[in-house]
Length: 184
Image (cartoon, rainbow, N blue to C red; front, side, top):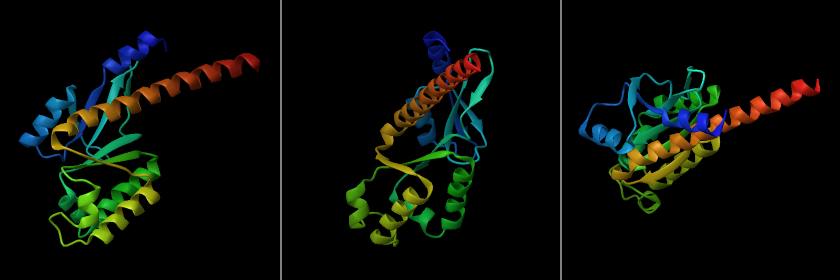
């Protein structure tokens, strides 16, 4: 893949939005902030992923390689670790089984609020920190806090970088395979 072809594939990036994401004003604003064309699709894990068109015209769908799970605040995250833990953990188990990398974005909060229990839930701060760190260790979850107005841009930028790295790795693997064939 030439640098031109790489750039063309990156420019063709389409945001994949899980069909279970509710069509709210917040979603509309998030999609506008991402500034990408989008497609609604049932994703196996997460709320967002991406796809692009390769130089040969085929589609590359990264939804089984990388996904972004978004929570509107720590209160919603507490529900996921509390009463909805079984369903939430099943999603991370599915991701681990398929080798899907998951980013977790939590809007409007931060570590200080997490450690000090400054969120709307009875779920204790020690239990919340413990659950977050258990999922990070167990499932390789990467978690970021962000402001609501930053979420769309962050989703775009994370997925763009993941796509670029994957395309460059594909190029590297193709070059290595060609070299191996020449030496065989």
